[in-house]
Image 1 (cartoon, rainbow, N blue to C red):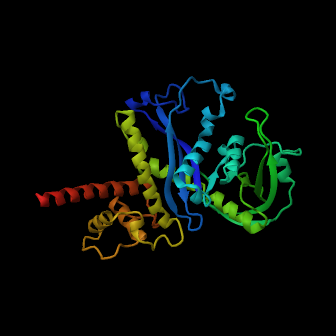
Image 2 (cartoon, rainbow, N blue to C red):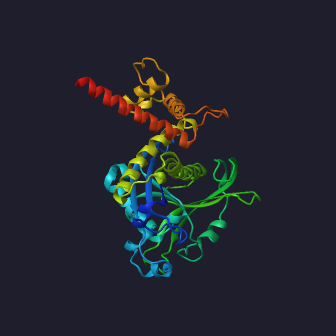
Image 3 (cartoon, rainbow, N blue to C red):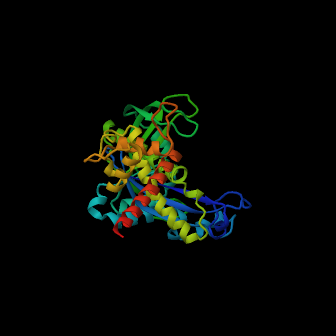
Amino acid sequence: MAVEDSTVLSFRHCVAESLGDTGGRADSGCGGVWVHTVLLVDGETKQTVGLVEQALWHREGERGVKHHRRRRPEREKESDKWRRASERMAARLGPEVMKRVISVCDRESDIYGYLSYKRRAGQRFVVRAAQDRRLEGGGKLFEVVGEGPVLGRVGIELGQRGGRSGRRAKLEVGTRRVRLCSPKHGPQGEPVEVNVVWAREASRRADALEWVLLTSEEVGDLAAARRVLEWYRLRWRIEEFHKAWKSGAGVEAQRLQKRENLLRLATVLAFVAVRLLQLREVVEGVPGARCQPCTQVLGDEEWRVLWLSTARRRPPAKPPSLGWAYQALAKLGGFIDTKRTGRAGWSTLWEGWFLLNQRIEGFRIARELDKV
């Protein structure tokens, strides 16, 4: 699964003047860069594989000219970031690997040009619909989907998010094959054929779930439709990455004085955030992750220094588990588990990671001194 989304990195110190508009108040004194990230996640094990694509840019131009965007060529619009990310990912992975990759995106990616590109390129996708598009043969997407028969019912676990507590939702599920027409105002082209999986919660709750997912995958039965729903749930992993990058690695707290150096450090911290995320998955219930060797996240030198820093005895011959690495890193960061959850916060993990790297640097210096 190639889960992707955009975020903004905001800064207030002197370098903000050389950055772009973040979309807040004009007098906020804040500058920043926009970032679009593609994170690979194993669709079977649910484990994070790593970053495959990331683009940073800053917004230029005046405010209040939003209505001019229709006049701009598609390739010059910011929304073209979805297509560009797929092109770069395909160039990096190659055609054989791309056959196994499914892009998973939220409603912002529901763009005719992007869906048309994915179909022409033969790339797989799951996109949550945002636009009530015209259909070939008449009718609108949401209307036609709403009239479709119920294929079956499934239960899905919804994790805690924002002010919403975690719960299990019971969903009515249906499928449909449709052909989406090009928009009246925008690029014209042939209708795009997609399969649709719709899921709605039979509840009167104010936050009742309702998804309409556009996909390249065949969804002829309930099992296939449920698989698409599970794939879409993995999209929240990119939001966890953003939390790890900002709250954990503290990318927005950096105070470098030159724009170029700040962006370089942001890129380095993005890879640190991935490693923190991989460790965090140990306590998030990813099957089998806790028992796997810690060398999936830590290098040989790193886990040995971490062992000596926390266990304070001779390291074992074989690398310990990821579960041990998570707890040891949290302990180094000051974690005492007062709530008995066994789950350390992003800032605690980052503090442990920071202290570990300080000790590794000291170890390397001492090793070089022995050679003198």
